[in-house]
Length: 353
Image (tube, rainbow, N blue to C red; front, side, top):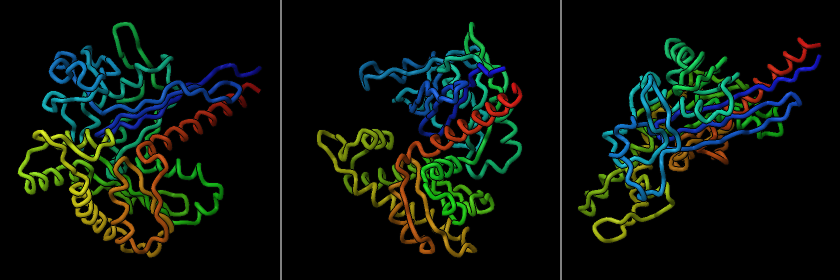
């Protein structure tokens, strides 16, 4: 008897700055059908407050997702102009918030099926070793979820990895010579919004004892220091969110008090200092590691750390920026989800024989 059942799988990266997910189907013939690939701001707000944060026409955008959490309507993925109504979470208990669950439900809402067989996601390097956090996320994500009055979605299995592992999975998949990966020490630097994650991989195995998170060393810290320097030098006031928006739109100037103001040099100055302090901390934590074959930089702002990494991590032979730094972790989760789905399919086929 032949297996005729498709399996449905997904990968999700719920960050402090962006929400990213992919989902698709593995057909009985082995073909992978990608249903959706989403990248939106990591914002979630109750519907009752939405009018206060969204001005029609300001960005020519609307929130891509409307979800229901505990019976209440939320909008997910909008560009916010009022952080008091749609705050970014900075604390360790982010995964326990309604905001986090709303963003998870954005994935479930986008699915074309009511049964998700496999879901892959990640936790920061300093949280993946905490069994309580891992168990909490497993309980929160698996099982049946009421996402609207008329729809329920079941997640059968979740796999949780250290966030930088996603970038490593993706890196390995793009290497032609697997032995070169297995016999090397690789350092992954993952730049986040509030922190810099790092993870050492030796002989193909993540070394969590040489992994961690450096707080107050993320993109927001660079923005805030740049803003302070702009204010001091030019005696003008600018918000970090305005600077971030200009960067995301590929601009090198920001319009303040009737004129365009160059800000790139302030970003460069701030990133040099913050990257230096963070990398000194990482170098200290890795002081017993003699030689590193490659440092892989990932994350949307990873280029801001590259120069300092090359100077300070002088026991590393080569430095490489991921070809898709913003999506590096998600790409790896996605490949891992495909691999798990294929493994499950082979097991099912064996049972039919």
